[in-house]
Amino acid sequence: MEAIINRLSAERLERMRQAGRVILDSYRALDKADANVVGQCLAHQGTFYELEHYPQGDVFDDETGAQYYYHAHRPDADEHGHFHTFLRATGMPADVTPVPYHGAAERPEGDDAVGHLIAISMNAEGFPTHLFTTNRWVTDETFYPAAGTLRMVELFKVDHVFPCLAVNHWITAMLRLFWPQIRALLKARDETIRGWQRRHPGEDVFEDRDLEITSIMAIDVDEQIALVEAALKGMAVNAAQ
Picture 1 (cartoon, rainbow, N blue to C red):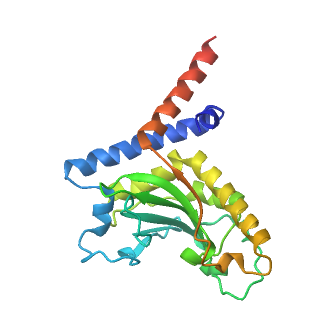
Picture 2: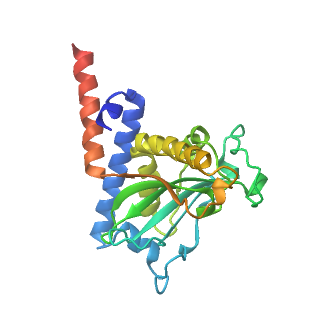
């Protein structure tokens, strides 16, 4: 990933740098209240149950079409739960179209269309550990190709105080800081789908319960910020020569 980050434009790197600062500032604000990202989503929600969405009713930004929720459904000792992030039809670029689908399952279309962007795995301490993508059936999304989904990632923004302003700024910034990883994961997701279809001809790959996670990658906020700073420093040195 270091080599990929080093090849990014100065504009992209600066955007990632600013996102990293937002993430760290969100952690600072939460830590002052002895809180964390996950805890804020679960606060005042009663008992934490697997498969339930938190906070109840999900988080929406009506101005941008962004949506997210937190839950757990994978019995993984290293994961407390994960966030699913989406962009709804109201926030999508007009020229983005879904992956063609000829199966029997119903999927949201038109004004109800929704694209799953990326999922963020969280540990018990409330910090992110992995990013991953999923098959269509997992979140009942419409399902858009990688290129279109990546355009949606750029538009994801939650900018209000429910359930917590720091959490909303954090999750928005996560999709900015880890843009290169998300791009790679979305491409890998589509490759996984195509490969699965080749190996299972005649089956509806998008509804196959044997295919859930389509790509996954470990992440580290501090390491990513350091790589971005190093890349920008390298650009400055080269420009001065």
